[in-house]
Image (cartoon, rainbow, N blue to C red; front, side, top):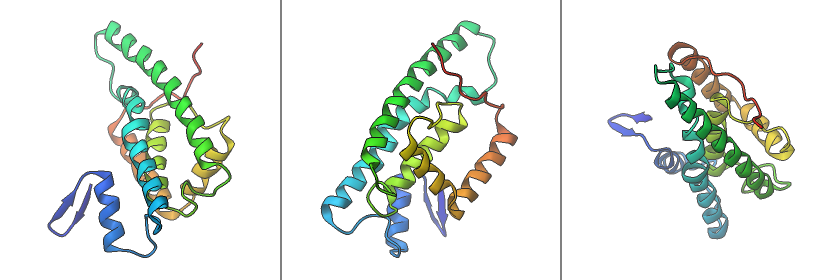
Length: 172
């Protein structure tokens, strides 16, 4: 959520667009129409495609209820979600190619994709091992001061509000 005076924004896409318009330098979207459209598609893919399987991991930060069969079903769906996430990693690795950022320069697509992968990692999803370009990209962004601050704030909130999440275990 972003609060700017009496304006309250809660959708990540709208927040990024607002910040880009309010603080146009450096831009969060490429200037060329084709590159701008590609950036928007990658941002949409992060929010609407990659986030779908990540949602199936959300239960891991909650206390288990008394219904062990329901929890087992959640874990089964989570394993399927992890497989889907790995497929997305392969696609993202190919889209990134040899670039430093998804659209050549740091942009909205990098922000959105990073945040979804960060959420997935917090929920015990698969690591980026085996996707060296994507892993290097993620590390570069995690090292940026704004990203490091957000990650630290989220880790503090996780410690206070959520159960610890077990690290990823490859399933057979």
